Length: 292
Image (cartoon, rainbow, N blue to C red; front, side):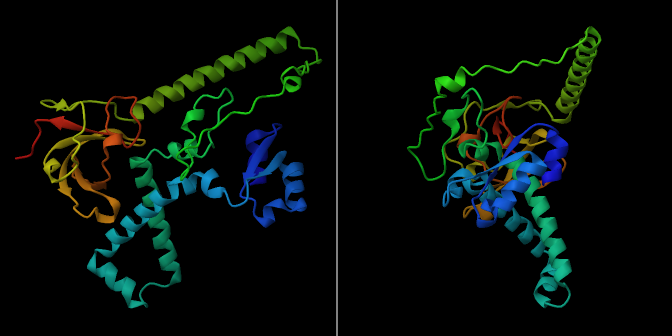
């Protein structure tokens, strides 16, 4: 980890937040971070990682749910189930490979249906310098929690900024300006490429997007066409083919997409929306779109 910090941050200093485990508070460990990684080790409050770590705010639960889905999908094939239960056809190495494959697919599925940034927001791991978004810090299990940003002491706020005493020539300034222009052009180019990757919001011909979701997300939705926004893919058009009465492995609907791909989803009223600004996991009903 330390070499990665050295490569990415170069001469900049950083802070590494740890869970306050015994190994993470040892002087040798902290000194190694400071000397080799130019990083300050900062331990979280003991017994409070379930409030301060995104994975404990719900991200881990969502991934585990999708791992279970991937495993069950694989086991639904009779030949695979026979191999799994035989105890001889799959050795330990085979099972590790299978589990790695399940976790990889599960993570992709989770990223497509869940806004993982929200778990970083609610745990306070996306703190901004100016206080923007502080009201989004809502740790799991603390319904009445409010985050009060500490006031910077006046003596620190008024501390003078050290000036760079090194002489800078006109040629150096010109070179720096040219480099900044090149970086800006590259960033704009990258943004254009990224914008082309995701499918923008659209309404298929003959359909009208419903402004609000039905309060009753039940069997009556089967047959309706929907739009769903996938992470990294964008908006996709499909139709609701199944409703799971007992919420099959946490999912309540199956959607069949235009390419024939069948995917289980968790459709919730609070995730209803439309437009290019919508987050991944947003969905929208299309009016008068029942499949006959």
